[in-house]
Length: 411
Image 1 (spheres, one colour):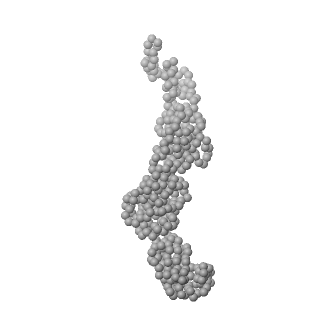
Image 2 (cartoon, helix red, strand yellow; image 1 turned 90 degrees about the horizontal axis):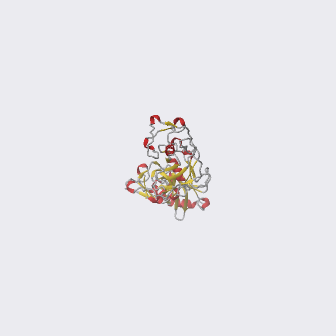
Image 3 (cartoon, one colour; image 1 turned 135 degrees about the horizontal axis):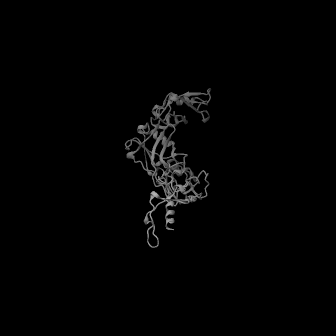
């Protein structure tokens, strides 16, 4: 009875597929101290060189069972422990499904992620540690329902997920809630950012999935140098259609975009485009605030696209009583570049309308999206004499040549 018990113990620890699979590769040897009879006489030793072959062999017919599961979103690893030793080489990560609940369907579009790969721990044991791929981690974090707490982290292993040393597949089981869950405590970090002044956008790239719904553009400052010396601008807001992700684009508010263009020596090229941000700028999916970038070590823009858009007149107002023409532009322009002789007033949009081209005028040389022109006395009186032109909104139209004014980038 003692020998039988010891043999069962050895078989239970077998991890070699070339041993214990039939009577042809199953032998027994033991030392004299292995057991004694009732009077204390030691058993006759059987050395390994003359081991006794098994007279019968009963193969393993018990399928392995999942007994333990842990998920660590801080180290991006999961651990599964089985009822017996499994063959590492048979692990198929694509048969691992992480689920937000025990009832969510395997094919659901949210609340479930089927793994695509990962690094499996070495050796044939009853415990497998899987280091998740970066792509799978991002997919998990993007799902707002999955693995956000110890009650939303389930695993379902399909039948082909792993085999034991006897090539028996895993016993199919219901999804198992994580026995141990560790939340992500790592602060996200900004990897790079791109600025496109032509589109009025800034593109952000992070080292992990972040929650775009928490973005606070007022926690971002644009500055001229990496050390904070020189001109800077505190951004007030922005708009994005993104919800979550590692990368997304934010559109500047028009007020911010115009203010940036008005600031001399800031965001004119890659060499004077740096960014600093406070932890309140954005959070990851677990609520961890982003790593701050201080003003004394600002991050330089990766890609910079200059403004190549030609400004256009979006509206105008004409007051012949005061002799003032107010021009509103699509972006800030340099008032010093305005040539009023390129401005023509018309009675209609048609080619046969009555028209009058200005001969001059005075105005401020500021950089702004609105320029007020004081008409020359001659132009004001000439317009007042034209009974078909500028007598009402219906007879007041304006045309302007493309070279009449330049924006802050010379367009």
